[in-house]
Image (cartoon, rainbow, N blue to C red):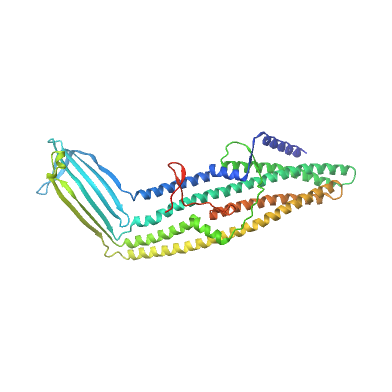
Length: 503
């Protein structure tokens, strides 16, 4: 009896705590919208999208000319330094001097040939403080060309890879947001199931209390047995315990859902059961085509193959290294006055040509092994990609079949719920009239409770599967809307989405 009193007090305390808190009514659509705006997974997706934007901006900047200013200001020395003498000896001479140099250059890489072309002007000054002498020397204008030969052209490969990586980041953002919607839908229905369990448990507790009182009255007049009375009392205690546990489960899942969708206030969530269950046909081939056209994985497969091809090209180019550099321009003689550096009378044409190479004569089979390794890695990548495509196609097929079955399950679950509720009402009335026993009533109640849970669970399966299909294909089959638009780009500088022109 003490246990009964304690359990009852705990149940009343939980109920009062629940009633004292503010309630917030939320639909499935509202929960998903809050998750897409506030959840950590949505914030992570937005950060990754911005990262992809700036990574692509870095690539595009490498194709533009660069204006560089570099130099040394100052390079001061005041100490004894070793100076080689004509006879081979070394004299230590005390010096007090400074040298400075500046270079301003415009540099452009020609991506189709990997040629670096630069225009620059240089100026150098030397100060000898020991005798108060200063000198200037400069190259007013010059052009330089640098051309590596037989090496991998990184710009060529980046031109193929960088746009795909950027496109992949845009698609991944849409996928991540759809996955956020799927997670929010799952949490919504998990809490909804527990709320239904709590509602069922509270109703059962009240019903068992009524049944216990009825059995007490019948026992007192001799129309019921003691074991039936004890069974009804046990059912009453069990139902109260289940109600208290359901209350704790609701509070736990409510906290989990609030944290996910970013609700900081401590409120009771009252979820609205979705009444609409749209029915629409999904063709496997159509779903698979949308997935291939929109999913980031299919870009990732292309990137993996490109990276493998690039590794083969790098291994091939590593066999030898040759580069050519040349420069031509005007340079001045050493002058005491800065203006003389730019005086045409003291300028002379100057040029430089350099051919550098590194050709291994005997490498112990290193190049051959490197090439074979790259080829085998390329084959492994192709096998892995082919298997990943097969696995993904199977995932699409399973998702389509699963969704079709869920539609049928919802229809059956709804019909079962209606029948079970009607049967329970009839059985409960017959029990109160004394026409059926407690076992028959218990069975009818269990069937009713199970039918209610099964219907809510079927709704959960439907909406989770619906958002899973959206994430897998980036297409909304319900509304016939494409969820991904390649022309839309996020601009972090204005925090807005803009539409670029078609090529």
